[in-house]
Length: 623
Image 1 (cartoon, rainbow, N blue to C red):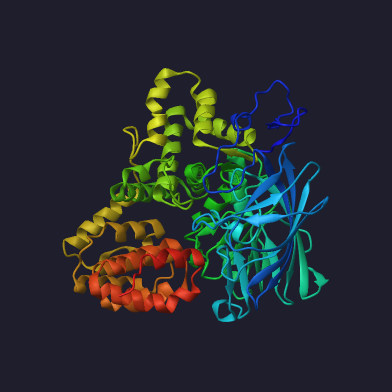
Image 2 (tube, one colour; image 1 turned 60 degrees about the vertical axis):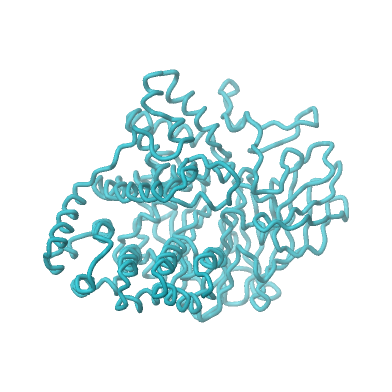
């Protein structure tokens, strides 16, 4: 929500984005920005509207050093502005009127510190000279041995509330900001950001080369992203391309061949792509997520490089975030389903458009199984879409916000008709573009624009039950995929003693292979496990999703023969989706598994991102 002074000077109002004076303002603009429990900021008094970074990368000290110039808007009587920070070393603060004072509040383990800066009438900019701490949670500094090129590498990961560890700003998803940056990288390395690249080859600068960037659209601060490394670029289409280390670029470009088609399919459904280019950056293996939807430049895990384009739905998901998440953003992390549930639904629509209904149906069926596991694991409060209570900003990373959220939208589509639901979603993205959103606002908007007082439709939809109640409402329908019926028949045959060599593994895609491994009995004899591995080559599969399912089964059966594969998997990548569950599975296998977990983690920990280190530290406990 963009806030400005009114003519009265003391109150704030959100400007309408429509050119038609008679058109109703979007609901999110007519309501005040809700309090964010994960930020120290007080945007109703003073808020950041633009960030201008001038930073140098220091690989020796593992620090970014320079200035952040903030453009602010403040109420007439505001005497301070409160920013978020965590570990930042602030040297001075200067306003457009001169030097000013600042102070840090006490540190909260989860939220960092409030950085309070004195302001007064006429203050419109703050120039903060600072540097980051070596252990900044958003930044991972990789040594040459940890990269494909043998050169140092830096990347940031701001979601959910880690931008405050490298940028002094108001780190709340509802406080959208534009930004520009000048980044000095060491000679021979290239800087890229989630913004328009203004100097593709850099400019001569002290300490290396300076790269300049500009993001003209207001974004939530968790989407400010930076990477510095030995990077090559290969175009895919007129608006799409891939960055990666030189030895990886050809493999990456092959996997990303459908990006331009995905972009056109997405636009056909939900309107113009508003960010200019859509490029992706394939990061080193320690990247903690599958992908991060940074605008204009998605960050991707190399685990999607299966060699056969079998995991490209990941790209469809991150591209879909260009509408749901980046264009319309959850104002609070308690409503992260508005980002991830919408995006998972949109991903399925892109997959269906490009690869057919059966592929989408299999994906939905796998997601249904994940929802059931999440509901069974509980507690009930964690199975609501709108999360309540005191909780971490990262608690929204689950099958509930992703898959239950997408199932909710598919239920809306079923009850409204696809034509009506698509028309609503396209309008929703247009009317709320570059704005924050909450569950309450969305529900009011959907009722106003789609339900329109139809009591029968309201009853069929069960909107409040989906958003605010645990579990699944009675109108949730399990997706069916005919291909999975055939997979189930193969599982039945194998369970009856049939040979593993009879399994049509070579004829199956990733989804069928995952389904097979997921529905096998959790207890199998050593002989049957060995037969499966020998016939299907599971320990050496190059598909990370399939390998993860196989290793999970192997650990459940204490299959010592697969432990070298487990060790290689956990020491060669840092994607939390895979790493956390496997360590948890090992630790649940008594002394046998715990010994393996501790030994492997001792080897792997230094290569994980701080986000993953923190999570696994709580899983792999000392002997």
